[in-house]
Length: 77
Image (tube, rainbow, N blue to C red; front, side, top):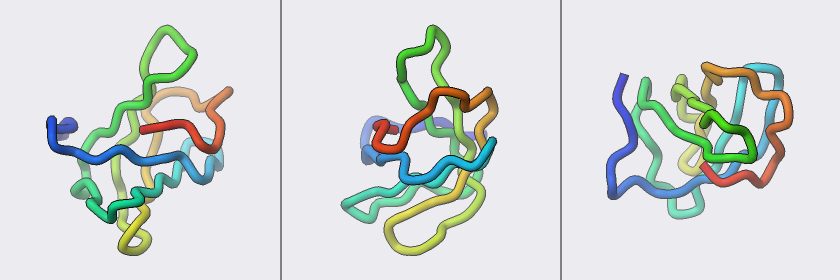
């Protein structure tokens, strides 16, 4: 599993369904399949999302590797 690089773009959570999280990227620079995304939120541990598919030119669908309780739409990724 890869991790974000310094030139990775920032996305925004647009949908959460249990452990499935959709993230949109305004500039269209999508992370690769199987890449790990990190969400720094109001919890002590960051949330890690593994990219599973590209939905279109601006969004991905990923699987959260931690609990998503409390995750909100609009959270930066």
